[in-house]
Length: 102
Image (cartoon, rainbow, N blue to C red; front, side, top):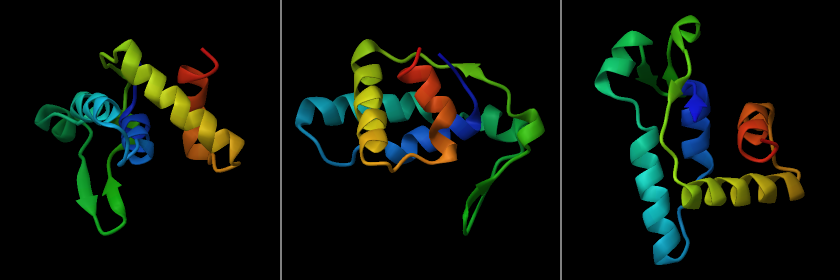
């Protein structure tokens, strides 16, 4: 799936921190897949700061991330729950479109 740095960071922020062991293993694998490589950090001029991180959004091009069906299921579940609870923000729109509405 093609995801930008912005989408990857936002996705990592909504993944569950507590679940059963199977779901936690799926989430940890997904987090590793979503992590930025050192090369990506250099390419987008990524810099962590007190508010999270800054990067050059003009250089933030989507990259292909392998996401297994189980991980997609977890993401869909989380996004649907946020939607039901009216907790989605504008930061989640593209993720909702790619995972839930796709």
